Length: 338
Image 1 (cartoon, rainbow, N blue to C red):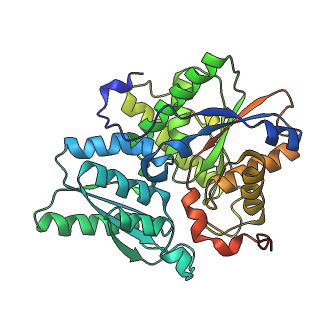
Image 2 (tube, helix red, strand yellow):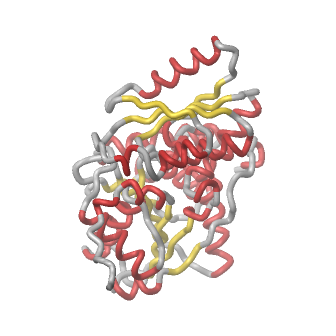
């Protein structure tokens, strides 16, 4: 599994830290909890999409692109990091934002990730909820080609076999870090949405014969659909790597989608509680859409006895704390002291 065969442009600060969460472990009385800090990748406040963009942007440059196009929800972390990567590499960037929540609060529609998209110089346009966003990107790409531009289209979340290579690399990085400190990893848990992070992790960990299972906590789709999406992408990623066709099988892909709540990007009480708990116990900020719901699921599963007390569980922090500023009303915080 030689990732050096694939074009890559260095955008992030890697390897990201692997840290114990001793306070949280004691508080929950459960397994030994660790956190892989992919919120520390550095590009525009960091996040998991940076790993994917290292391969996607390298392919864009190799194809002679002068413009990149991508899409996401209004408060898309992927859009922010894509805009930053384009700025760093001197490419124009078009961001298409889909209204998946119906929220009209200016903090949500104009602040946080949206503000940063614009600060990085991206052209931002809006689409209604339910729009065929891939078709919308292709239409824009054709318009740009007709005007003499050379656009490169990046799927939502950067989730295709090229982008997933970033998390194949993360799997290798994680296994190496654990080996260096003598850590036996029993479980990896993370928030799963567009499928690229989980597909890359599964492909990498299976190809390494690590024996480490990955559990994705879903933030959008029902379990059957999420698992099918991850499996399909993991298999395409394995094929892209030249691995045998039966490398990734259905039993390698697990998702728990019980913590989505009313829908993608809509806060849940579990998310709010998890964000507050990590901030208070570990000084770590999660995000309201992905890592907050992922941690809420992990905490609840610990309470159910899903993990053994002696096990080591690594939570992949996919970043996105910037999004907290888009959801101020979700957090009932105490008044300031006199």
